Length: 371
Ligand code: NAP
Image (cartoon, rainbow, N blue to C red):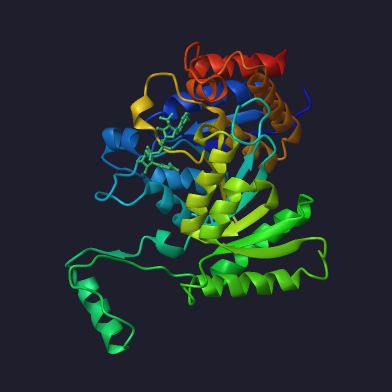
């Protein structure tokens, strides 16, 4: 097997809900690829809280800082109350500013489209996702409301909660550069800026302006890359009706979160949507989906998204050959349509009867790789 022969130590966070079972399935497949990965297992989220009372122990961050590369399963975040997202904390702590989410069709999924190939770049550290929030009735809301009123910028009701939306020149430049560099390196044709600059002129307006400035800097060296822009709502409609119009997308944080799930839906759903969070120093790979608590512990969930995240990780580590073999085996098993998890079964045949378990599906892919 043509691998680099290098042993790569990677931090592995199995995560919550379906995380541990899809992680095991992913490890089966990566082991079959021949890539020599030494998984350094670290617990975060519910598993860690039960053991140590901590949701994100310092050891997790130390491990990622030392290994530079991590792969994680989903982590649960309480809705509307409780602690801040650990995913957001990890991205901010490690300055993983670039979130890359490819949505590529696999033949035979039965998804709405069979020829989608979109790669979305989501700014990962700013915007409404920055976590700068003030609770209803707090001192923060009161003082900000005073300043806003003093400046004649509008009224904020005294029973409001507040989330701030910072978007900076610095943050925008680096995500647009990442998208343009990716487009150039991967022979892509177009980068589309997604925004709501008609309404939020000083945040999305800044995002659009700075992205265009960066694009102009590439005009001489990469004239083959077309750059256009779409308002997010119109872009959503057009993505659903004509996904072939899109190639590389670059989005502020919140729109990137939402539009990437939409793109996942075009090619077959969250079960097959991978992602990477990349900064200057560290890389953390993870599926787009969450912990799907209603499927936890049942060996039913689709592990493709975390397997494809591991494929992205293998490419990042220079293990191209192993990456391509895993990708090809996944594509073949899906195309064959015999061993499929419940979601793939439902999409292709309209029934979950005869669905395979998480691990049976992984074993079929592993056999395909070694056979
Ligand atoms: P979710 O966990 O992504 O699940 C939503 C639905 O997507 C599932 O009910 C299932 O749909 C489908 N799905 C997701 N993963 C799948 C898989 N591997 N195989 C097959 N189907 C899959 O979203 P959620 O229920 O809104 O969120 C649950 C928790 O996860 C929340 O606490 C949220 O904050 C967290 N979350 C974490 C991350 C992360 O760690 N990066 C990302 C997103 C959400 P069907 O039932 O229709 O089959």
